[in-house]
Structure formats: C-alpha cells, structure tokens
Length: 334
Ligand code: MG
Image (cartoon, rainbow, N blue to C red; front, side, top):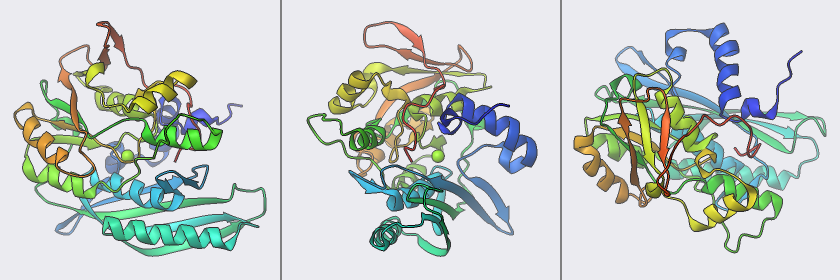
C-alpha cells in the first residue's frame, strides 16, 4: 500500500500528482480544473475569489511572524494574486490539549493585527481540541473571500511569447528563517521571514497595466515550482537569468551550508508577475515604489521553447533545466 510522505505536502512533483490523481479526479469541475490560487466565479453580477489553506508551521513563532499572521497573509495573498480585493476570512483552530492558554491568546492577537494590516475581517471560525500527542501544539485553517473587478482578467491562457517575468523581491527568506530558528543555525545575521499581505501591491499592479497576464505567490516549492506550474502543458517555456535573481547574501550562504537550492525555497511575501513586455517597466516601477516590492526585478521572459520547460542561464554562462522540486527540503514550512 502506497503511503503518504512529507514530499506529498511539499508543493512539488508528488503533491501535484496527488492533487491531479485523487482530488481533481474526485471533485473535478470547471472552476477547480483552472487550478488557480483561488476559485474565481460569479454570483449574480459580482465576481468572487474564494480560497482555503492550512497552516502547520513549526515553530509557532519565528523571526518576522507566527502561525497566526502567516495564516492571514497566506490566504490574503492567494486571493490577491487572482486579482481580488480580499474581504472576509474564516479561521479554524485545532489545538493540542495542554497548550498554554497564553499562546492561544498571543496567536489570536496576531491574527487580529494581521487582519487589520491587510484590511480584512475574520467573520467566522471554529476551535477543536485534540488529545495530547494527537496534533503538534496548534494548527490553523483559514478560508477567505474577496471581490474581483469585472475588468481584471488574469489567466495563463493570456500569456504570450516575449512577456516579461518579474519577481517582487528576494527569494528564500521565509524558508531559511524557519530553518535557522528550528535548527538553531548560526548564520551570522538573523534572517527574517518575508511573510506579508500583498493585496496593496497586487492592486497597484493591476491598476497600471491591462497587460498583466498572471500572478502567483511562490510559496512551497518556491520559484522553481511556480515557474514550472506556469509552463506545464503550455506551448511556451520560461528562461530566467541567475544573475537577475534577487537573493540575500545570508540566504545564499545558508543554502550553500545546507545544500539547498534557493529556487525551491518557500516565500510568504513575494509574487511572480507575468506582464506584456510593453508594460514591464511601468509595472516594475509601481512595484518598486511599494514597500513589499522594493527589490523587484525582471528575472526572465516567456520564450517559444523548449515548451513546458524552465531554463536557467547560470552566472557562469551555462544553461540548465529548473525542474519541479521533487522532494521535501523543509517540512512544515507554512
Ligand atoms: Mg498561492
């Protein structure tokens, strides 16, 4: 009997296989098959985006955030990259018997503050307590709903050869922050998670260009997973330039130390934007003027081939294929 492994939750190859063969198989419908970060649909005259996530991050508190703010921002961001203005969240907690009440209060306060910062409200919720040892301290599940402007049309079907690929900032910060906290790595400087609400940034992006084709937040599986999701089964590929990738020196050092590829490390406050080349500079400049996009860079472009592949032009002048991550680099990252 095949068993579920940590890699099935990694955001990489095995997770996509599991989703396709089990969940798309069982629930297949037109909205789900689009495999967006949120389901986007109309009810009456209004277009909605609707999404859900679970958070199992370990440790509960880390530099730059905690499981509460992470849950709020993660859900806000999945709505935002679909072009939605996030409005309401639902929040479910699963708590292990014996956890300090003070920790639950601290996390509730963090959820409230994060919701305030993102301009959303938690309007419904649930709490369950399980016996000691039946879950690890506290897990959170959040769902969110937002409104999508009629004019906003973000879809991989709109991607064209020649489009620019923009990353909103440095990659790998979240994963390395969690890892260094968990393993007690001494990296010289403290690496802070990038966990942040991106609805302000995405709203600005879609407001300045009609040629924004697609946005996605490169969370689990990192940039490697997101870029591969964009090209899979498409008649185009992506070429990215290693020298253009924004990576903090401390993250680079950590990756070398533990043998990680920064391209497959999770981010919690970054987006990838595909935009028509004619508007790339305009979009880049509004991103750079926003606090969560100051380090935005054009990292590559959409090319005719090899179709379905992501190619990295390395800093030493070679070319390599960037694969969909296959294993689990850091479990319980979010
Ligand atoms: Mg997402």
